[in-house]
Length: 468
Image: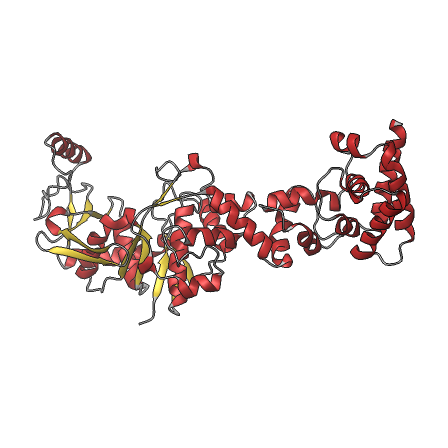
């Protein structure tokens, strides 16, 4: 058997964290078993589904690197197929027309609630009903078995038993003929030969109903794995009040996709005490059967720590590819000098996010208008002038413009003037960056380049002279 999993979001909003984790688990399971991963867009909710949301989902999947083998398939393009199945279920007696009005159903629900009964359809039209008029609207209901049970051998939760007597006759086609979720998902899973359905546990109550429809169609149900929900730090379901829940919002906040994937795979799954996993390790070690049955809590601090590890340990070219997006957002063309991967190499030990790294990289590409006032008052003064003037003269004639010769020049200047290294290096740092924070000063001066370094030293000297 070839393993075939699917991710089937509804395009009624962005790709959220919970959906991304479900997609990741489905993707990992398919990759581990040499199977296929299918993307399906469940857009039958015509009022709420939007093209913008579809694009947001596709963009999120692309950014995360969760490539799909087939799809995206759109349910709205399969209405003819659903019509065929509805007719088949009607013809075989597994479905029937229901003419009950909205008012009757609302009154039925109110009475059941008042009597503390489980709200459900009472089956009035189950054994045949006379249409109130020739053009009376109707829905199609699935004729659910009234006895027996449905056993779901869930890969995460274990054996879950549902009594058919507790399941009512759900609507599978609306009065306008459009299919409902429980019909379309069943038809799609059967037609697409899905072997494993990994989805949120909010769908668990739909599973016995879907299994009964599959059996009515003579299809073999897939294996199911219902993933527990993600909670915020307050123990409540993760939502916007807990911070970013959109996958692409994490991109905008400066996270690497691998860091987010690593964090998501650890929400409910573990492998010993290991915290950091490469994608290949995730594929090798992940098994949906090892996912915890309990809900997981989202910890932003842990995600931030992971992101810092990935920025630090990834290749500079990989980080640069993602950093360029953030530089572009603040008006910097990363194609200009210095080479972006060199800037990354100089900064990746200290940055927690790419937004932070981009902000700290501005001075490499753009001349600053003014020095940080506090930094300049402390470091750009008459006492620092001899060192800066000497460095300007030495840099102008330095034969080999590389970090090591630059470092030796700074050291020699400090020794000649009888100053500690910091008394020379820190004024130089402020002259180069405009503030007190930069990568090692030799690397900083090297990346800025000789001409701009000399121009910035001239600016610093002029600042000192103007204030003296």
